[in-house]
Image 1 (cartoon, rainbow, N blue to C red):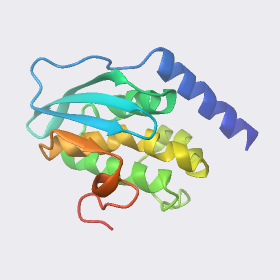
Image 2: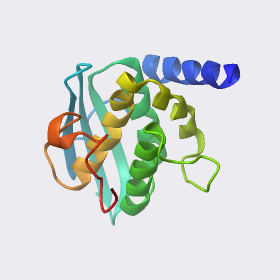
Image 3: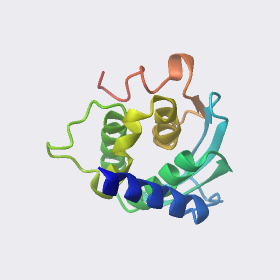
Image 4: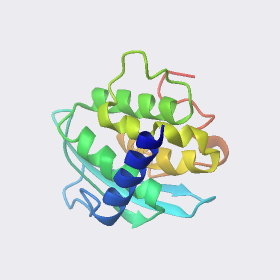
Length: 162
């Protein structure tokens, strides 16, 4: 357990200090703005889909370390994947962060499981989920999304799941 927490902290700090895919794409085909009013996270996500594959992705904004690290890792993991595969990761990440995914069962999260401990920090779950929720919004051409009210990813279904 201590090793998992240490790894979590190291990953968060590394991706917060040196976020991957930081910036916006001038030739983006999809974009969305994500807001977490509780924490103050505010990110802009741009995606370039080519033949239904995430060809390029970038993000920027003001956010806490957990949100920035989650966005950084998300962008590295979804780049090169199909939209469908990326959406599957959105759902699995959300389920992992909220404690609904049994990590002993098959999943596609790989190194993203470093965020599994966030489920024990209820006030930080929305911070970790915001980039993923924003990616889902971008894919669906929703300009702005939030982690509050009817847009709350903790309670609103993503895709066809409940």
